[in-house]
Amino acid sequence: PFRLEQLCAGWLLDRRILSLTLPFVATMKRACASIAFGAALLVGQATASDVSPIQKVVQMISDFQGKIIKEGEEAHKLYAEFSEWCEDRNRNLAHEIKNGKAEVASLKATIAEEEATTASLNAKIDELSASIATDEADHKAATEIRDKEHADFVAEEAELVETGDMLSRAVGILEREMAKGGASMLQLKNAESLSQALRAMVDISVMSSSDVSKLQAFIQSSQGAAGDDSEPGAPAAAVYEGHSGNIVDTLKDLQEKAEEQLDEARKTETKDLHNFQRLKQSLEDEIKFANEDLEKAKKGLAESAETKAKAEG
Image (cartoon, rainbow, N blue to C red; front, side, top):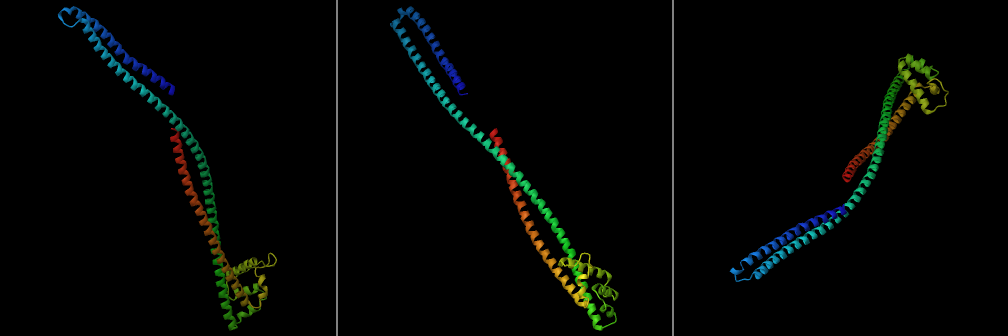
C-alpha cells in the first residue's frame, strides 16, 4: 500500500507540473506572435512616430519578460507547495502504517487473551454447575432423612408417652386395690411370672388386653435396646420374670425405663435436628455463594465474547 501511494503521488506531481508548464509555453507562443505582429506594425508606422521601432520592440519584449518571470515564479511556488504536501502525505502514511501494524498486533493479542478467558470461564461454569447440583442433591437427601427421623421420633415419643401413662395408671390402681386387700388381688399375688401377672391384671380389669400387648412390645424393645443375653425368640416378658414377686415394683421399673427411653429419644431428636440445621445452613450457603460465582462467571463470559467480537471487527 505504501509503494502504491508513492506511485500515485508521483503521478499527481507530474500532472501538476504539466498543468503548470502548459500555460507557460502557451504564453511564450502568444508573446512571440505578439512581438512579430507588433514589430510589423511599428515598421509600418515608423514615419509617424518619434520613437524608433527597435525601442518599442525592446520595450514589449521587456514587458513580456517580466510577465513570464512572474508566472514562472508563481508556478515554482505552486510546485514547492505541492512537493511539500507530497512529503507530508508520505510521512503521514508511514505513521499510519506503523500505527496500523501495532493496532493489528494488539487486536490479535486481545483476541488470544479473550479466547483463553472464555475457555477458563467455561470450565469454571461447568465446575460451579456440578458443585451446585451436588449440593442441591445432598440438601434434598438430608431433608428426606431428617423428615423420616422426625416422623420416627414423633411415633416413638407418642408410644413412650402412652406407655408411661398406661403404667402410671396401672400402678395407681394396683396400689389402691392392694391397700384394700380385696379378693381380686389373690389371683395377682399367686402369679408366678410377669406374664401371668399381666393376664391377671387383664382379668381384674386393671389393664386392657390391648394395653398388655403394648406393654409386652415395650418390654421386648427394652430388652433389645439393653442388649440382654436372653436367647432369641424368648417371650417378651422373660427379662422381668425375676420381678414377679412384686408386680407393683416391676411396673414402676418399667415406667422408669419408659421415661428414660423417652428422655433419650428427645435428646437424640434435639441433637439430630441441630446437626441437620447446621448441615442445611452449610449447604444453602455453598449453593448461594456458588450461584453468585456462577452469575459472575456468566457475566464475565458475555463481556469476554463482546470484547473478542469487537477485536475481530
